[in-house]
Image (cartoon, rainbow, N blue to C red; front, side, top):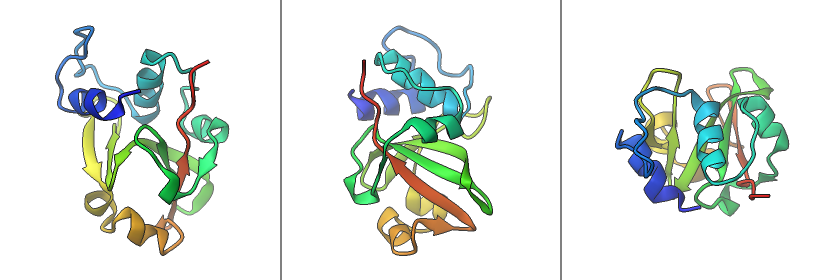
Length: 138
């Protein structure tokens, strides 16, 4: 999957290769589901269930297209948000239905880089960050 170019085009609001408009709005798990289905990869629709079925990896093993999961505040075992890793310190996310899908960085979103967050056990603001390996097509 060529995550970077397709995902950055999606985040910019440009139509995808099938000329579908991206402004209809998706939430975080819907974005993941849509992107992976478009690449013939079956993944559940719910962020927490996506986390349950995705193989866990360390932050330094992440590759573009892998998933970043964020727990609920104070509930490390409950996932409330998911993003797609683009490489380096960047990811793409949909905050909630009706908002623009956007690229962001760990530094801008969490105030620390991914490496800095790893030094504090990927925990910030009483939330835990988990990394998952991109599912493969069947």
